[in-house]
Amino acid sequence: MERDEFAALMRELQSLVFNVALAKLPPEDARDVVSETFLVVWQKRASAPADPSERRRWVWGVAHRKIQHAQQQRRRKHHDARFAHDHAAPDPVAYDDPAAVVTEAESARRAFDALPAGEREAVIAALASDLSGAEIAALLGVTPSAFASRLSRGREKIARFLYDSAPLGEGE
Amino acid sequence: MADDRMPDVEVQRLRDELAPARAGLVAAPEDFGLTFASPDELIARAGLDEVAKRRRRRTRLAAFGAGLAAAATVTTAVVLPRLDDGARPAAALPVPTATHSTTDVTYGTARDVLLAAARVAGPQTKDIRYWHVKSFQTFGHRREPRELWIGNGRPGVLRQEGATWRFPSRFPFGGRRGGNSWAEMLKLPTDTAKLRELLVAGGGPDWLDDRWKIFSDAGFLLGEAPLPPRVRSAMWRVLASVPGTRLAKATDSVGRKGWSVSLRIPVEGLMTYIVDPATGQLLEQREKRDGFKQWRITYVERGPADTAPALGRT
Image (cartoon, rainbow over all chains, first blue to last red; front, side, top):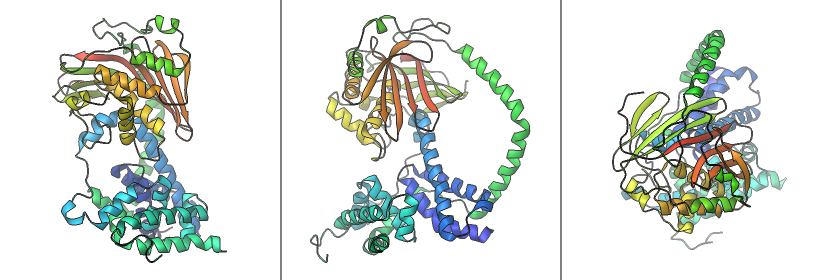
């Protein structure tokens, strides 16, 4: 793998890794998961599969372990985090402009946050990448049909908020 | 096969239908004032790591020797006053500090032990200046002493890893951003159901098992927070209401006798409290996740204090 290929792989997958990690970790940790994942990918580039799809699965395998590891570290630092880390900086507020966007997007966000973990992961993975459904299902380690049904349930719940003014079921 | 195409169809439909919401749902590091490392930065770091690895190989043996010496120092330096009486003079290891009566009483279930702890009143925390907690955390072979002076309406002091620094005496709990003040902690619900709700709501992401959230957060609060007697009691009762706990006689890592209340949660792992029901104190908390080393915090002092150390001293 050359530098340009590596850069393209990062462009393709870093948003996916970040967003899936973000469901389980604070933003700084999710960002670190992305860095550490691709650091390992570069270090082990000699053993990267040639096939693009297999290569993405290989990267995902690294990311998955990094996420688990970060969660474990976080548990260990649980007590420290309570008093020191969490207060070191003010909480980042990503959606802090109520006047501008307390509209459809805000409602959709709330609906998304309320989804069960499996559905949320499926939805965010589909939105944060351009990969095919079959490939995302394989990455997340769920069967294609389970993945499809999670997506469909998640989509319906979010769309309900998004198009709240329209009668439910219209256009189905 | 239709089954193989189904996810692709669903993905396309989702992307089309949720297109207006996509920007609000997909986060970028910039939303949090962060940035991704660039490919070139990572490539450079990989190069540096290589250099560091070679250097580490050379120094590993020396460091190993130094580590053993440090560990030996720490073990002999720890002193153990009784938990229920902060004023009692310190005793040297290995003195079991919980009274023998703890295990003379026989308990049938973990619930009995937790309810017994709930019946011990504990000190009032309304009018004290500081709440002082001394403990050490262990993860694998790494042992980190930790000492806290939480201020009542004033900043707290945390001493850990050889440094002493100030922190706002606020308690991140119940999912509340920025945490709760001491005054707010005094007003926590004494109703078991309401307290349980708070522990679950703020205890972590929703995929996490509720029982794990409860034990994890209640452990932190019983371990380190200046809970008023009625809230402490309610906290123990919430724990007693959790199904699936197991009971065993146990000795904690500094030799104090108590009862171990443990909870095995699939996927998460094993959570254990060592409780002294006679004094209503949490002596030790352990978390062992499958495939990982055990994390443990042992509390050796807990109670009101009039003063906190100055900053910068170690």
